[in-house]
Length: 102
Image (cartoon, rainbow, N blue to C red; front, side, top):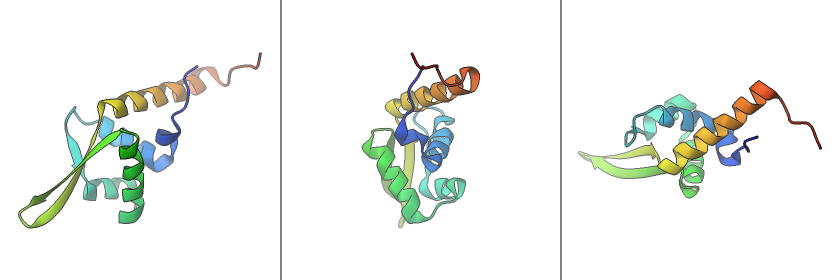
């Protein structure tokens, strides 16, 4: 049975990873869009993204468009692997239930 990924498992981070994983490789979303999707405050979203970045699951790029700051977030290869592994864990539960103790 696959193991849960406690970083991905948290509901807001799972939502973020699901959205980012659906994008083609190398593409990302702006902080503002992720904030709307997650229904999070700036601080809350920033904290979750920091956790994902520290784990190597997302890459955060900050730049400027004109004079406005822009933060874009992309899922990394490690993030895709972690997300897929966590989904496999959830599928195991849904399809087979909890394994019996030996």
